[in-house]
Image 1 (cartoon, rainbow, N blue to C red):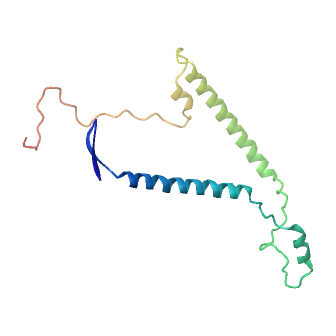
Image 2 (image 1 turned 180 degrees about the vertical axis):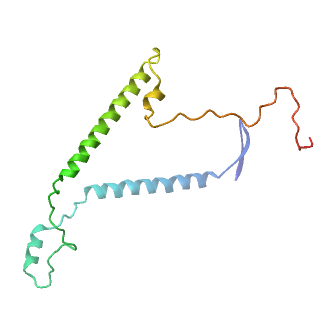
Image 3 (image 1 turned 120 degrees about the horizontal axis):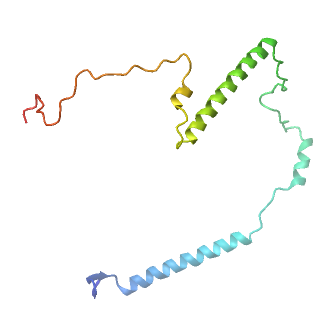
Length: 153
């Protein structure tokens, strides 16, 4: 290896013959790769011969294709009973009431500049009670008051 001086300082360089040899090897591999790619692109693909498959139907050693699992044919949905119709009317009424309640809440949220209503009152159910206000167990000490602690520092 030879030593050369560059603007960054002295560096070790491989010999010229090693550099040229590596370049020639890389060039040979590149040309071989391009050649194999061209050969693959011009190669005629062998498509399966459909006429040859027609003669297989008469042979004795062939097996007929059958499904592994036989599926039942689809059936029609059962008709709704009268009891189901009554409950669906009740469900529809509940859904309409909920949709109206949601629309009212969205209207209140959309009008933030106008004091129109309390969204908590709109979304609360009639049987729901507001939570009781909580008081802290002990009052906080005023700022500047020393706090007693078990920590020695």
